[in-house]
Structure formats: C-alpha cells, structure tokens
Length: 510
Image (cartoon, rainbow, N blue to C red; front, side):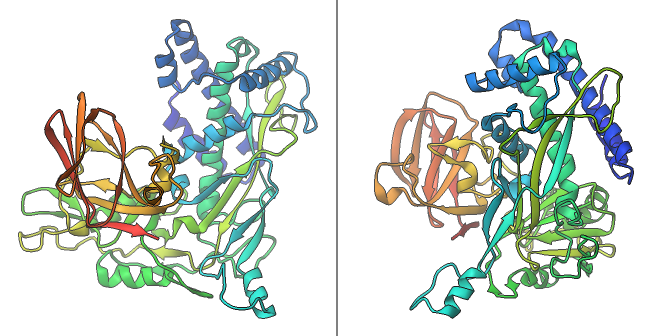
C-alpha cells in the first residue's frame, strides 16, 4: 500500500540533490504511485453512482468545458501523440482555481501570503508597502516620482514549475472524472512541494526569492544573499515586541502590524517553541499563551535553529499556466520504453514586497524554561483568555468558502478562533460592497463574523446586545453577523442558548 507521507519524505530528500535527473526520477516515481493509488480507489467506488461518496473522495462533477478538455487530453495520450506548446490542450481556468482553493484550505502558508492565480498573465502591478497611493494638492513632478515608486511591475512568468503526469494507458479508460482528480492532485502536490522551499529560502536563481533573502543585497550569479540571522530568545513581551517593531518600519515609512507568521522546523516547534509558550494554569490545564497574534507554520525546509517571522501578506507569490497550453509532451527524461511522458507546466514568481517584511531568526538559544504554572492571580493569558475553543458548538468556515457573495477570507484572517466563553480572537477585515449580506446600503460595509453552527435544530433566534434581532428563523449551519467591538451576539437553537459571541479581544483591521 502506498504510504503518502513516507513516500513524500523520501521525495523531499531526493529533491535536495543537485542532480536534476535524480530529482526528476524521484518526482516521476512519486506521481506514478499517486496515479496507481487513485486508480485503485476510483475503480472501487466509480460504480456506486453515489455522488456524495465521490465528492467525499475529492471527485468533482465536471462542467461541459472541463469534460471536453479532459477527453481531448485522453485521446491524445491514448494515441501517444506529441503535445507541444502550440497545441491547445488547455486546462480550464476552473480546474486551476480549484487547485488554488484546495492549496489555501489545506496548506496554511498559501492562506497567509499574497497567493494569486496568474494564469494567462505575464505581468502584474504590485503595490509596495508603506508608500503613498494617493496625494493631496497638485500633481507635481516630485509627487509623480513618488507615485511611480509606490508601485512595481512584476514579471510573473519568469520561473518554470513542471510536474510529471505518468499515466498508464489502462488508466485512461477511467475517464475524465478520474483524470481531473489525478491532474489536480499532481498540481497541488507539485505546487506545494516545489513552492514551499522556494517561498521560505529560495535563492532567486530560476526560482522565487525566499523570505530569508536580502532583496537589497549583492546578487551573485542570480543568487540573492541570505539575511543575517537575528538572535531571538523568547516570546516574552520585552523580547517579542521589540522584534515585531522592526517589522513596523520600512525604508519609506511605517505600517501597522496586527499579526505575524512564525515559520519553524518541526523539531524546533516541539522542542523549543511549544515548551516556551505552554503553561499550566491553576485549574490544571495546559495552555499555549502568547501576548500577540502569531500563526505558527511548520516546515521541513528550514534547518533546526533557524526561523522566519514576518508579515505573510507582504510576500507575493503568483503561479499559473500560460495562454498556449498547460500540458505538453516531454522527452527530457525517458523512464519507460515506448511510453511518452507528459508534463503539467506552470509558471510563476515570488518575492517579498519589501526587505523589512521578514526577519530571519536564530532560535538556537530560545528560552524554554519560563514559569510553567499560572496562579489564580496571573492566569489571564492569550488575549486575556484561558478557555479551550468550542469546536463542539461552533467552528470557523474554511477561508475559501463563499457566504452571500464574499469569501470567508475577505471577512476574517486565518487566526480567528472562538473560545469557550464566546470570546472571538483574531483579525476581522474591513469589508465593503457586501450586497449579498443586505439590501440596505449602510449594512453593506463594516466588519463581519462568519461561523458554522455545529449545534443542529429546526429554529434559530439571534439576540444582539440582549435584544432579539431575528426570532425563530429556519436553522442554518453557516451564518454571518455584522459586528463591532462592543457587540454581543447570542445564538439560540430551539429556544436553548448555544453561544454568546463577544469581540472585545478581536482585532478590527482597517
């Protein structure tokens, strides 16, 4: 039986090789195993005619455009025809977007950065941080120059990311639905594996520029130098806040910092980070306590003793296909006699938007011997809270979920949580033009809190600040409230109170 994690670990080790043939062979073998596993799985369930089973395994109902595109690809592969960049074997944009949505949902780094689908685009204009986008007064030459320097033209098709599609002829008989799942799996795995290392530590030489690189440093043979690692010894306020203050200042001005990401090797996460932030409270419960919103991301692509802390949305990463074709024939490496090899071909670019957005840290001396027991007097922790989250009653929907015309990611950050007493923590984004929420103009702008109600029933009642706002409406799992920092919202299901939300500890980001 193909073990995904074990094979992925072996693949990652081979990808560290300097020999492209070893890298290619390892990727081909891994994707071949994926194809075998998916074929076995689909063969077992395809005759059930149960759409729920197929959907739960990741198989989609294809649109007519998708069906036609995959059938064309199947025909060419079955005939072992060559496909070159001038052929029109294109993956529909809906397929690429599904891949992006899954990456954002399943891999935290893609939800935290400025991750964009740039299919069909060769250049994008990006705004630099802490620079003026508007001005008061006359448009003088000095103002023009400042405005020009506020934006940057990024070429997004400079780096190539390829993924092998090793498909045995027999598997083509499984049809477009299977091929769709396989192609999406290959693209997701390839983007994740090929991108994560580059996003964190990429040299800039035929690959993106990583977060740990000095983009203002001297470039040698296309390679950007690493930043000098800054010693970071603890998450106590007197250590953490001065470090975060470095992120709030750029060469051109200042910016607000409401949350940061902290990227670390899994070994250091368990051996250093968790011991540093875990404390035992007076009730005998272990809690992870922090004085500031931090999203931790584990990666095997950082060495032990090193970490990266910074502003996730200040890293631009665009990936997509070109206009001529996404899947081509390749004879770069021939693995089996008389069997053509096909490539799913993507292009992209990634780099920090400014040189001050990320800190490269030396955490080899991170303090893990802080006080581990909290007394009653000092048991107020993490945003003033010490409760567990209430996943049995309420959960936060996936960032890619659409509610009344807006994605959850438009409304809240990935750091949002609901604690047992109903306290909401994390980042709420300023939203405009939310016409799907209300037909009343003044209710189409502000801050919105989406949640999934896990307590089922037939009727719901909502109370805003103790006053009934909606009574005995039909029960729905997914709901959105328009909120302010001083509001409370009580949710009752069939007359019984489930939760009372408060937003005192939430961050309302402009």
